[in-house]
Length: 121
Image (cartoon, rainbow, N blue to C red; front, side, top):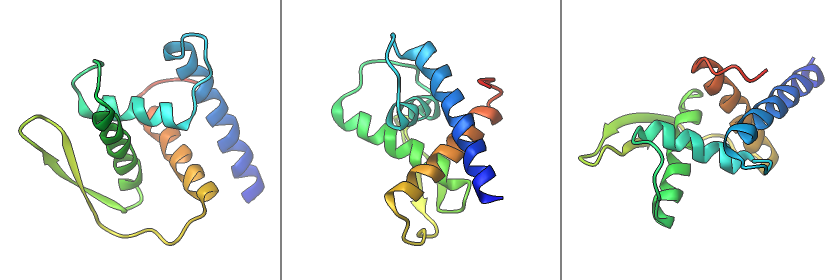
């Protein structure tokens, strides 16, 4: 059963990557970091603009918090005066391998895009 879920997640992830790459990749295949960046921009809600290096890091953090809040790891606290969302660590995840972390983020990103009504399958 787990093997079937992994295949299903991989297939859905491949479809998501194909979709975002066609929309935002300018001919390049995007990866998990690029998907997180797009989610961060969406969650910020200010549209795309040039971001500083620090802001890009913050966008990745926003995306990770948003995705992992689904599993109870983070709690949304609200936005600051500049409109940036802030999160608090709620429950520290058990120690996960890098591969397990990536898979959890990929699964949650798939759900995120589906919940947004963005068809990519």
